[in-house]
Length: 350
Image: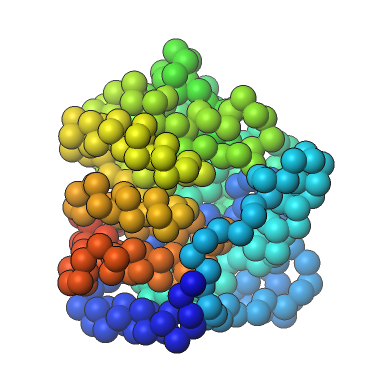
């Protein structure tokens, strides 16, 4: 547990460093990507807020921060109960979105720029999530927009679709979530689609942010492990000169034993083989986060929060907590992860 007093002290460190640095979040979701069932409209009571109902947006506040995760919905055995729990949780987290919502979180955590990553899927959504993201956020320069390739776009149409998103919304990155989008990187068709996306990223100088690890809340159980590092290692990442970020350090919802013995050795080899590969540290339990920070070169790490699934300030505090556990003089590493590395990769010339 990090008590509220220490939380404030940690974030004061960030504020002192911000006098000389710009801080970036390379991994945030403007809308829910797990269910993608909500319809948003401008809030009748809050300017620059989009809501699923008429409730008022309440700005986030700092609190004590537990470091151990509580029992998650994935541990509920009854499938129907688990899905109900998940839906309730997501509705609470994503009841409101928009520039004012993210701006309030950014203010608490000391962030200046955020990369917003929609994820497209075939689930009957009324509007393309990339289009919705552009309509809501494109007039605020604190936000850099990403896009996602809908399953309905054929491999041959990928480059043209990217071109349209660049021209329409000035997108700077592509989000790929194998587990949610049900793309198996170990299959011939999955590998070919990912490599087409990589070629398009190279053509339009777009960073690629790819989910790494499991997704135990995904309804189709066969796709929950598509993002594991053993499935990603066979992709020809050299097809793009632009940055490729393996999100969650390839370790999302993976226990510490699995990360240490199976994921880290493969991840290290991939980073050694491909200079364009980076990792982000979003969504990691503190024990896994410390393990990653001890084993991966700081220059290959960028900050990601996975907001709004987690608050940006809590991820910032967890990062500082982990860095302090590793070394006494941690400010330089914090600057590299939060500012220097992303400005030289994901946010380069953006």
